[in-house]
Length: 101
Image 1 (cartoon, helix red, strand yellow):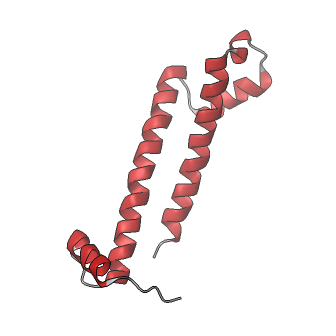
Image 2 (cartoon, helix red, strand yellow):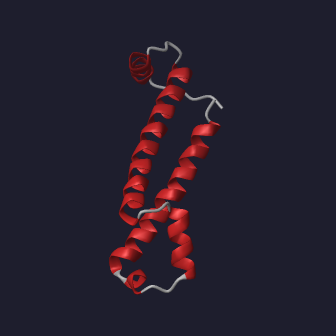
């Protein structure tokens, strides 16, 4: 597959990365973007781990095996869903990063 970039975009990629080859510069930018998103996701995961004092896998096990009253609070349900989404997002971003050349 060939990707045609406007000349101005190719120049911006070169200036941004220092690599004169637009296809290589684009990969560098993609890697940086994914790494940045991973950092944000990991920060969110650390926040939940600090709040609940455990990693998501342990919290999920408790959620699924124990019937605690606090599990029915809006905040707990919302946190669980958002935390689970971050775990899923992290796996997806790691997969995307691994697929880049």
